[in-house]
Structures are given as C-alpha cells and as structure tokens.
Length: 436
View (spheres, rainbow, N blue to C red):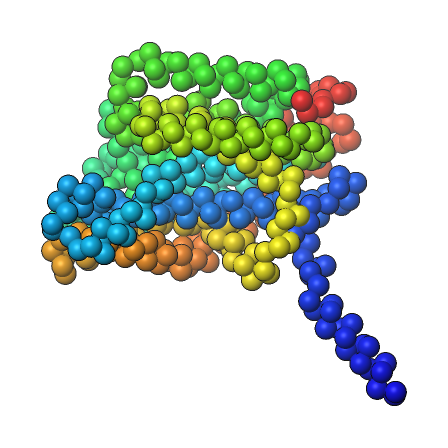
C-alpha cells in the first residue's frame, strides 16, 4: 500500500508524456484575445512549413533540367532506356505543377512583410524598412551570383558549358537582368529571375501602405487589382512582351504579380484584426475549384500569365484556410514539425543555391559518363542533396546578414510620438481603417 502514491505519480508522469506538448506554442492557433506574440508564432510556423515545401517543390521542378534526360526523350525512344527508367519517369507527372511554388513565395512574402504593420501594429519607418530589406535579401543574393560565376567557370572547363556574357553578369549583380534586349538569366543560376521582381514588390510596398492608411483596404486593393490586370492587358496586347513571356516563362516587372503579393498582405491584415469570416466550407470549395482550374491550365498549356494568376488564387485560398486551422499542426510529431520549420528557415538559401549545384553536378556527370542521367529517382536524390548545401549556405551567409538586418533595422528606428507617422509618405491616418 505504501507504494501506491508512487505508482499513481508514475502513472501521471507517464500519461503526461503521452499527452500533446503544451509548451509547443506553435501548434495551436489562439483566439484573437490572446497574446499577439503567440499568434505570430502560430502564423509564422504555418508560413515556414509552406515556404519550405514551396522551395523544395521548385527545386524538384528544376532538377529535371540538368539532372535528368526528361520524360519526352524517354517516351520518344523507349528502346534506349530500361524498364526501371520508364517506370520511374511516371513519378515526374506532377512535377510540372511545382512551378506554382513561386506564386506561393510571392503570397507569403506579402504576408510576412505586412504582418508587423497590419492592424496598426507599428508605423512604417522608411529607413528601418529599407535597411532590413536590403541586408536581408541582397548580400546572400550577391553571394549566390558569385557562386554561379565560379560554377560557370568550372563547368566551361569541364564540359564546355556556355558561360554568361559580362553584360548579363553586371545586370544580374544590379538586379536588372529582367530588362533589356536579352531576356534570359545567367547560365549558372536561371532561378534568379524572381528576386528582382521581389525587390520591386518591396519598393512598391511603402506606396501600398501609404494608400492603405489614406483610403483603406477596399480602395487600396482595388487600385492594386486594376494595376495588375492593366499590366496583364499590356503584355497580351504587345507582341514583343507576349512572345517574351511565352519564351522564357516570366515577365520582367512586378506589376502583374502585385495582386498576388498584396493578397498575402490582405491575409496578414485579416489575421491580425481577427476579421476572417466563418464560411470555411465555401472557401474550401472555392479552393478546390480554383485548384482544378489551375491544374487544368498547366496540363493543357494555357498562356503562362493565366496559369500564374490562377495558381495565385488557389494558393491564396489554401493559405487563408490553413492560417485559420493552424491548430491541426499539433498532430504533427515534434521532430517532423521542427524539420518542416527548418526547411522553411533555409528556403531562401535553398532557392538561391540549388541551380548552381545542379549545374556543377550535371557537368561532373557528363564528364564521367558522357551522357545525361536517365533515371528520375536519381534526379530526386540530387534534389535532396541540395538540402545540406543550402543549410551550409544559410549558416555561412544568410543567417549572419539576417541578424545584421535585424540589428541595423532596430538601430535605424526612431521613436515617434504617439499618433505620428515617422518618415512615411503620409502624415495622417484615418480614424477607422478596418480590413475589408
């Protein structure tokens, strides 16, 4: 009988270990009345998961270019390849849809940039904002450009892979490579096309924020929609721009993508204000419907500009539903959750460095085997191999500059008097600016 209290205590300790972790604050979406810090952790944990998955999806999409011979060549000459190569080639069927991960990146970027300023969280200080954005994005980007140059040099001497023209290198360094007569990217890192667009969206945000303080959400987002669809109309009406878009799969400026990016800002405002409606079933139906249409547009090879807008709508609805149901993440095992979060943390490094890695591995493969790699599973293994490379790049380059950006951003902020907007484009704010 004396051992009963100890037995009861041990049973309680054992059942406590089996219960969901109460200290894992990132797995439960709290009601609006709880601490904003806890809400932010919940939201950004879900965002990190999506960002990591989107980054790896883009990596898998790109691994087919240099690390695999391709489904079409296998289907065109079946006698030249083994049955195993045929069977694994079918695993690549969903990969063409992974390109839409870039649209999810734009959406998440708008969410993350606007979140600290949403619902009057804090005023936009141009100096602090500019310092944070520059040191967060440009130094790792510049390092990726330098690595791409080294990879081009090595690949040229190994297998005579073409190198980028000096003018294209200079354009890439100054992030203006999407403009000019040559629409293509650096040979060593073609994925860099989206970073200048991201920079332009950062430059547009203070204008959007100022308009938001002046006229509110309905007018501001209407202006964004008109601008984006007008840019789309110009692309469709201009043969040169339309042909360029269809040839290289992207347009050289950010205006068409602004509506997607600001959609992320819309979600940040809704989450911070707690104004999301309760029609979850309707939203899920719309998400499934938009997903079917987006998949159909890619499968039937619609014009790429339509595909990207449709995928942007799909990811907007999915992200909105996911943010409202973030408590479902508590069913993830802690180690799995941490793995997804880590993948999201290194997503920018993964996006920057994966293409030079593929180029180098492809050159080494060609040098030793004298033909392109023929099995899609091997290409997937190379895609997985980018993860430790991206983590090393994150430790050496991205994380130090990220911390520098935070430190310099805080030192650049000046305390403003209550109700005063410091260093902003406007000096007044409407009394009632509800998200709509």
